Image 1 (cartoon, rainbow, N blue to C red):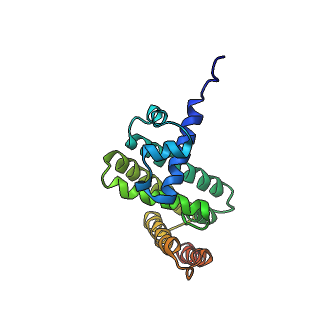
Image 2: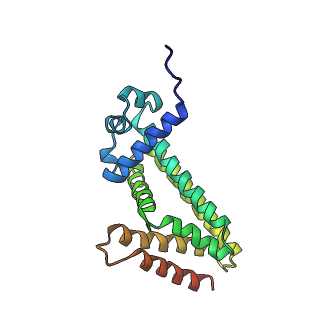
Image 3: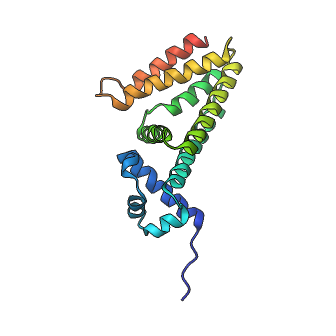
Amino acid sequence: MTPAPVDGDERRDRLTEALLELVAERGLEGASVRTVAARAGVSIGTVQHYFPTKESMLLHAYRRVGEDIGARAEERAAGAPSAKAALRAVLLELLPLDARRTAALRISIAFALHSLQAPALASVLRDDLAELQAVVAAICTLAGAAEPELEARLALAVTAGLSEPLLFSDGSFEPSDAVAALDAHLERALP
């Protein structure tokens, strides 16, 4: 009997999900070829077939996280009634307001730290940050900001600044506090 064909894209996706789960739980230190193979229920050789190096596996996973965040932000912004609401939707997608977004932020931070020693990842990260800055600046322009580039930088800085206390909070800083602070910033920046 001939074995069923393997869908390479599906297998790569499964391996990537296993890696991302491990990174969200344990950081990059807990994500090795061996632990990814164990989590995905495959052999180490299978992981190495799809990702010849750990760096290639990490780069693929990082791109996947960025694509997922971007797609959700774009979807939320597209349904917004105004440019200001679209900007809010994009920024809310970047805040760790629920388990999914918290995991995405933990993964993003882990990859950002790793990029300090991984030039290929650092290049992708810089490109992604420049693209995010450009998207936010374009929305700020549509929202009527007098200085859209500056407002984009400030909006992203506020979002990053609100993320840390949410991620490491002892419960004294709630998601509703972060949303209220973001809304206050947007009201001042784009009345």
